[in-house]
Image (cartoon, rainbow, N blue to C red):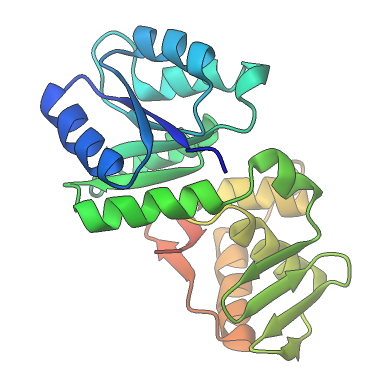
Length: 227
């Protein structure tokens, strides 16, 4: 099995050294870039398995870097995680919209950081996710082919819209979906529904399934949280 390559991108030398040290202790190969411009060059050259990308950088911010990376076909299977300050919901949403797979909160706890890295490297790529017909977590199986949900091996039958909301959220754990995005993806962009419609569907979904992973991001939307 090949050793995963991780590219760290941050304009702070201290953060690069801190994160690099913890990753190398786990046996990963680490590349570093201190600017967005350097990150693009290095990523294309080394084709990392994972890029950990700071949002706030002077020459080119992380959101812009991610947008460029997602246009590069050779990096289609590369995961991208953003480093964001706690509570920066806007940065997190912008990052996911740019093609990010996850975010890691600052200040960074080394053990939590390594756990998130390991989880990201195990996660199927977005390209693979689109072809999957089942999503499996501990105690939860969501089968798109059968439109069936198993919670601890017990079948839960959901109406189509509730199932589609669950599938959407669970297909990208920790990605925050705004209510507008959920409207667009589940009901179609030309349909107008009141803001409460999504909230009611999610409340009923929680009641029927007992799934505690569906979290409300106040004033924004929802996510399927994985720690």
